[in-house]
Length: 386
Image 1 (cartoon, rainbow, N blue to C red):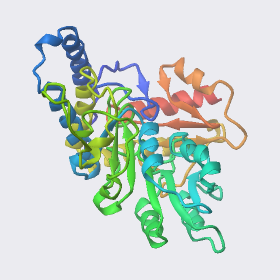
Image 2 (cartoon, rainbow, N blue to C red):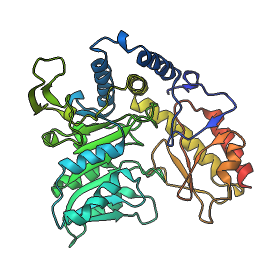
Image 3 (tube, rainbow, N blue to C red):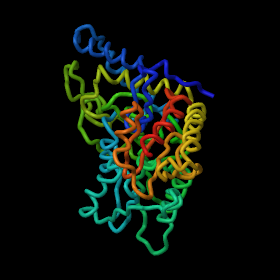
Image 4 (cartoon, helix red, strand yellow):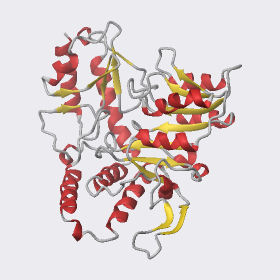
């Protein structure tokens, strides 16, 4: 099993940080790369002409490796919302159709379609599970519901951000293909942890940022765009999205036709000397450890958490989702009688950190955590909830 990687982070022993699903700490190597990046921007005359493209392609390759993609199918974007905006331009939703989203899913894969529904003549359906946490069955039932409008698109997270429910994307993808519908995946809480292979899953678009699970900075995200959509018009019109619009050439607009890859969808102002390398380092670290090793470690930690918090009268009646339905790296505590007042603040006062989300307490360990963190959380929780 992968050992704890705490030594690679600036994390004092007295800090119990179980909040990777909000934002992860940066590895020491990424922090150093950031400092070097600031220095580069301070002395731009020292930059080689090929430097920016080298950074772009390193990050693009690192992102592609996490999801089994070809680098040419990855666009450099700023956020999941930006990636969904690409989808809004390249995906055609038929009038009278449905777009499926998850109830209380994060805003990014939802609001784009809500804003387009009235003008586009389609309906956004918010899919809820029956209370057992089984998001997969709920989505499959919505796709297959007799008499309902045809499904054009499911725009969904593969792990629900607020309760940690894990969706079986292979089954959902197969059901969508059967009815001729498209799939957009917000893989924010999945990429780098659970195994994703876009060549097998075949989503239309899949997006993830770096500031959570893949140990990177804010403002960097990556969008996989299936080849069938790479003829679309990008959100921004850029020189590097065209075949030859080069400032150094005698003729500026030599060939303004779009490049034949997902690179046409790269965001403007992509030359982030400071953060692009930081993003690449985190993703490369995750790929080096491998999905199986990461999942094994984080499953062990969340299982230990669940066992420590269940069957005890001092746990404030907290409940956890069935292990078969939850992600291996996120454990959310539900409180049928309501979360105890100021619980997250009481935990933080003990230097124990987790996140309140929609009435639940979301606990999200990462590779820098260990069994001591788990046992300390359990003890601190019982004290704070008593």
